[in-house]
Structures are given as C-alpha cells and as structure tokens.
Image 1 (cartoon, helix red, strand yellow):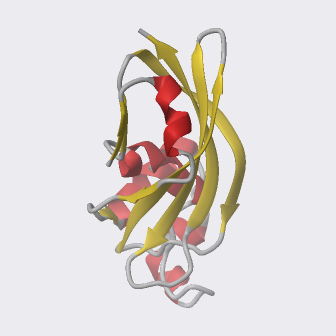
Image 2 (cartoon, rainbow, N blue to C red; image 1 turned 180 degrees about the vertical axis):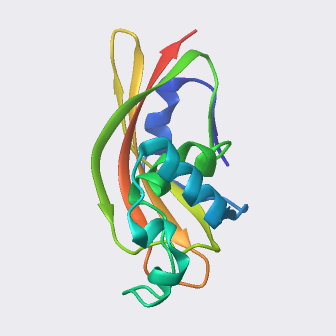
Length: 151
C-alpha cells in the first residue's frame, strides 16, 4: 500500500507503484450481468457456444466491464489522509490490450503519475495496469484522474 498523510503529500510518492494481492474473478455471470446493464449482448460476450469457435476460444468480458472494475481492483492500494471527499475526475487515456476471457482472474497495479494542487484540493493522476493471471500482456492500461478534496 502507498499511504500519505495529506493529498499534497502525493508529490512525495510520484512514480511509486503498488500491486493488489487480491485476484478478482471475471466469470460468465458477471459478463452476462454487464451485458444486461449496458444492453450490449454481442455474441462474443454472451454466447459461449458460438464464442468457443470465435477468435478467442471463449466468451470475453466487455472492455468497459474490465475498465469499470478499476475501483474494486484498486481499493485500498493508495490511502490518502486529510481528505473530505474523493471524486473520480475522469480518464486521460485507455488502451484495451488483450481480452479477458470468461473464467479469468485479474488484478491491478497502480502507479502515482501526477499530483497537482487545485482550489479544491489535489488532482492526482494514476496509471492503472490490469493484468490477467497467467498472461504476460495486460488486459488494459488506463490513466485515471482523481480529485482529492481536502478536509
């Protein structure tokens, strides 16, 4: 874990990385639920029989499903004290590098990229790499931005 006493102290840990010890299961039920939520029922995601003969040999998670799991995957990796509120500010860049097949396990590495003072607190940038267990190529790399409001 990376821990700092205040949002301003994030500048002291620029470039530091931490990887989750917890692997997260991406099963077909989760993929199906995401398909229902987003109304994206493309066969590559929801038809195991057809997908088995497809390019990946199995159904795959939606890229946006993997992206949406970043908060769960990174929970507790970076602790910032002295905050009254933490807000997801957005994304600067996202690349989906490899599909996550149903039944895979994923985890994340977070790297502190930037920390800029704002009138509200500190706007921090992180590089999040989501890896797939047993694979050398990550599922995705995203540059996320978080706004830490000072307490």
